[in-house]
Length: 274
Image (tube, rainbow, N blue to C red; front, side, top):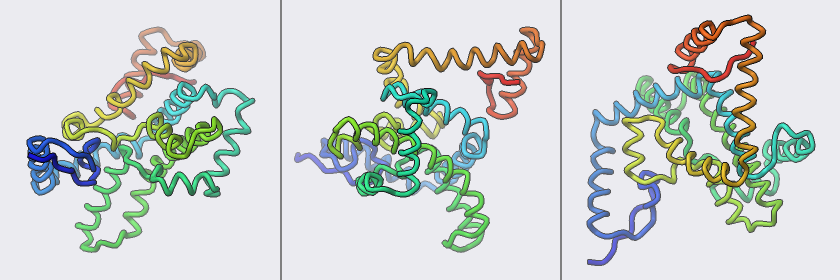
């Protein structure tokens, strides 16, 4: 039969708005219908979202790691380093344009670059829904605004990174549509994944990040090996310095990393500072 055009819902991932074979459309629609109407699954998604919220937006160490990773991948994508004072005027100008919503910002916003799906978007939506159900009102309460603020700030960190990626691409003379594509690719747009990965993220909550990031890291290693080695070396040097300052043995260091990792991240930490 004729091919079928999928809906524009972000739940369809890369298939949104595309024409697919009728058999594929039927299977995807059945899965989408079941996942959106099943009350047990909706409750699971809400609880899973709150768990992820605690692991990310409410976790100071994750903010630090996210900022460090953004700087690392940004340099891999553009060659511009936050550690290079010669680049600081560029970053300062970009931050000012983002905060002031300059002309480039408005063009990018009109193209839908900001507020794309990041891990916290889904979590914040789930939190808002749960608070609305608890209070019996759709209007976001003061409590809801306070509890959603960390997630909003966490998303803002990623939006700033996407803006700076777009600013770099724009300075290279790219057309605005290509600028947006560049920023979405290197700024990791989590909504641009297929239904299988969307579904898998329910079981493996953070699977979207390695699925999207690993190909980029491989690309950056091939293009800029020194850059990709520099940041892990900085982490290793910081850990070595902290170990010497504290007078720790290898066993002391391992215990400290395990304690900090379990307290803040639920796993081992990679970097120690005095």
